[in-house]
Amino acid sequence: MSLIGIVTTEFGIIGILPQIANNYKLTINSAGILLSAFAMVVAIAGPFLTVLTSGVNRKKLMGVSMMIFMVTGLVSSLSPPFWLLMLVRLLPAFLHPALVSAAIGAATASSEKADAHKMMAIVIGGVGLATITTVPFATFVADLFNSWQASFMIQTVISIIAVAAIWLFLPSMPITAHKGYGTQFKILKKPLFIASSVFVFLMNAAMFTTYSYFADYLGKINNMDPKMISLMLLVFGGTGVLGNFVAGRLLSKNVSTTTVGFVAGLTIVSIPIYFSGASSPWLFILIAVWGFFHTPCFLTGQVYMIETAPEAPEFANSLSISFINLGISAGTAISGLSIAKFGIHSAPLVMLLFGGSAIICFLIREAMTNRKRRQSMISL
Image 1 (cartoon, rainbow, N blue to C red):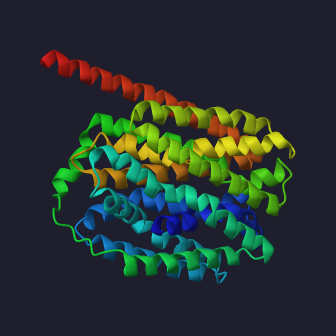
Image 2 (image 1 turned 45 degrees about the horizontal axis):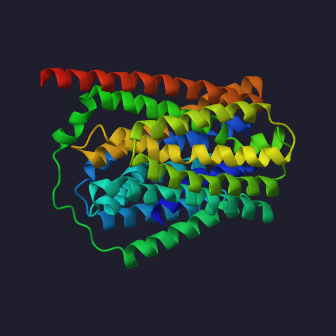
């Protein structure tokens, strides 16, 4: 439930971005900073706060974090000046990776190693569940009441429910074996971990070049009204849940093949998105396919990074979240610059560029892995 609250807070703004831009008299790419700045704070501050809070009881950390999400959502719903809206958007971003790491740690702590990927898939499934339920619902409510502030009220209610669920149903989870800071930071010297980090950055940049402007793109290029856009968000999220389930199963068999398979699908789908036009039956299928490949990339990217740092899994996970959000910020910002110069139709081309770069980075990382494996065999 906490992850649903996080995702609704971070990505719920995607469906109402055009309304916010209109309310504050901003261009769509300028309004996009509400998403990219959130992601940038997560990327920069997240790992350090995760390390600093790594000895804190997971229940207390998750509860306090969600209370911050709740308060900031409430303030946002009051239609504050844009500078204040930006500020309260940034506050919960500081604890975002620590909260996700704690949730994943709580879910996988008592599971067998073979089932760890499936447990991660269940937790990360909150991303897909939010994109199929709360994100489109928040967009629908905003359109129903002709008020983007209503979307933030939905986010606030979800955070309240998450806080209640954490305090009432989650057992106390004190950290019994706290790893030293030196052990955790040591993974930053591992070439394979660094290569995996760059790959995750590029992949998530590709994911959010177009998805960040989902509502504006479908409105201007595909001539969809807000109600239809809400439906398309629902379709996107629904197939994303399915994709996440499939990815969770496949990761247990082969991490690398699963990871590159989904990012390749995401990259390829940018081409028909670019050539899509006014609403038609095949557009419904296109968005369904897009969602299927998009959502699992959160999970596959995290697993791909974490497997290179088994000695510090929670810190590695927080770093993966940071590189995910660094990619979100870069993809949103660079696509925004392209939109400002060439129009909204250029977003899928930026998606194709980042996706292709991610695949090249993946191939380089795999070559490094194979070389290391050969050297280990020779030394034996």
